[in-house]
Image 1 (tube, helix red, strand yellow):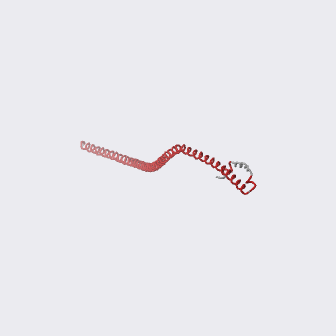
Image 2 (cartoon, helix red, strand yellow):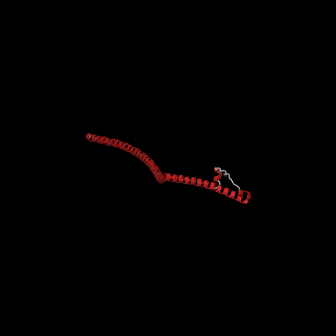
Image 3 (spheres, rainbow, N blue to C red):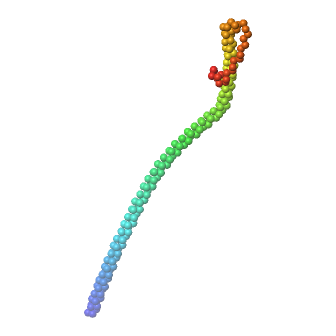
Length: 183
């Protein structure tokens, strides 16, 4: 019986070793499950944080993109406005250049005609001076004729003078200012 007892003791030891091993495995398995659960929780938290961070970065990037779009649109409007103003200014410059060319041509024409007009004015002044001289001569002749006619009338009207000699004095010459008034 001793061998049976030793078999039972061995069986008991085996059962005990199996139980110990089972408990040890159970303990390790529980610890592994807890660690895995903690690791999963940590990983899930970490992934959520990363996802949250990425969402925030994505939102920030969306805001920056929208701000850049707005800035680009504003710049395009300003560029369009500046181009329109530049076009308007260029048209004004072209108009002013054309006017300047026309004025330059007119100035050249006036300068060319100035000599002709100066010659004409000089000729008219010479003719006027000739007319003034001729008027003075005619006025002098008219005075002489009038004086002569007046003297003849006086002689005819006075019988004493008809028989005698009559000497007439020269009429005084009018000044240049009084001659101009008779034109």
